Length: 310
Ligand SMILES: [Zn+2]
Image (spheres, rainbow, N blue to C red):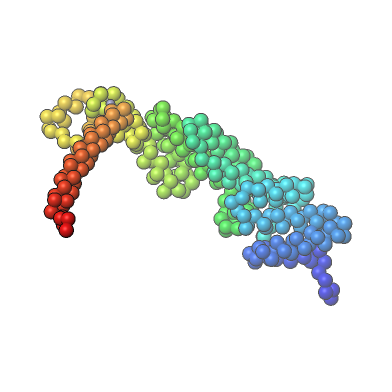
């Protein structure tokens, strides 16, 4: 029995380690196998072993797109070859394609746009990525999530939450200038989240559908606006029954009978708030002046009653 393991043995040992979920040892065996294959001039063997090392290395850096790209490039250099990953035999180009998509997904989700145009661009990129998952991987089970996180998912099922996120980004893009359109996109997002089995996300989207879809008439200026929390807000007030009756016959509400709040468009709300701020500031300054006068009086009294010169 040979004391030194052959390159082929090391490759097989690497596969065994992967099956046991021992990824750090697998990485070591694959790297050693690659070195031995290269020494023997077996460049294909070296390529296979180093590709496997690169794939296994992803496990330690799952949120780094670069790790996926390095492994993908390595696999692409193998041509149409079948590699063994855990229990699966998978074609190198197919696994390489999966890695590119997963890397692109991480990069896209880490991007937080700051303006409507950015949200629109992210929405379009999410839709394009969803389509690539569907067309390139379709019903095939993804190797990487299954290997490292025991999550069984297909290209088709990866596409669904991406479509939901795309609709939410379109919603964010429209909020400022067309809240009704934003509400429609959140409604589509809600349906995609339900299809993805994410009730929590569907519920969050439906809150936005309700808020942005709601319209009201401003109590102060009478403007009709939609988009609660963005373009109009509710303000606590005192309403008499007579005042409430003045709203009868109007299609849109100017107050919320349940909370006794009136609705104010963002313009009127801002003006009232600034005025209130100014008044509060003036009152504080007046109070400070009165306190200063009183303090001076007290100081004067203390001086008068204090110890006289000896
Ligand atoms: Zn107003």
